Image (tube, rainbow, N blue to C red; front, side, top):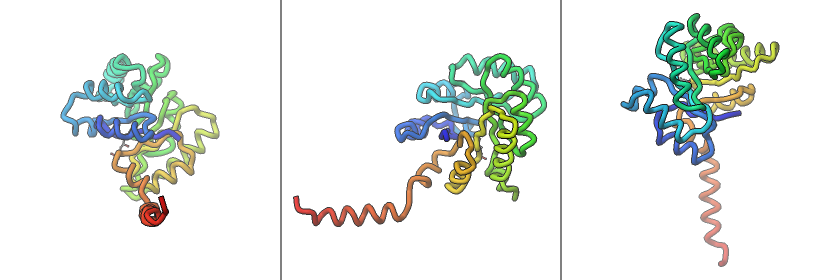
Length: 214
Ligand code: E4P
């Protein structure tokens, strides 16, 4: 399973890379807006640090505008993946991108039939937003499971990128389910690493070590 970081902050990306948890990066307009920098500047900076796939989102909502932005993003760096919303125009843009060899990440997916359409259009990644589904009382993980089954049934090569993950349980369930990629906010990394028994056990070992003769 690949670990992507869901952020536009270069310091978070650098730290995750140092820990070995950086197979790629996803961004979205809300995350980029928090940096105070232009979207182009942010993606250029990220691509210097991360050599894995870096998702940059189109802001146009019409097919022609999306394609113009997709082709522009693709020229920024060879690891840029164009993030396209799951709309009618978006799916059409995904199909054209696929024909042109531009990798895509279809975003804002909230059910299995949407994911089926994205795979038919040739999406490289599908991003079901699991946490946002949980927020409205729908089991996001069940949707991910349905997508996994459908993609398996028809041998689609589209990779499932579990997004909008909020806590360690999401990460465990996504891994058990066999998603291809998870994208997580930086703040989730410490929550995944720490365990009170690890800390307590380490304290005991360090105390006991003081009694070991030199
Ligand atoms: C993924 O590509 C999205 O940027 C992200 O996971 C959305 O997460 P959120 O629901 O926490 O904003």
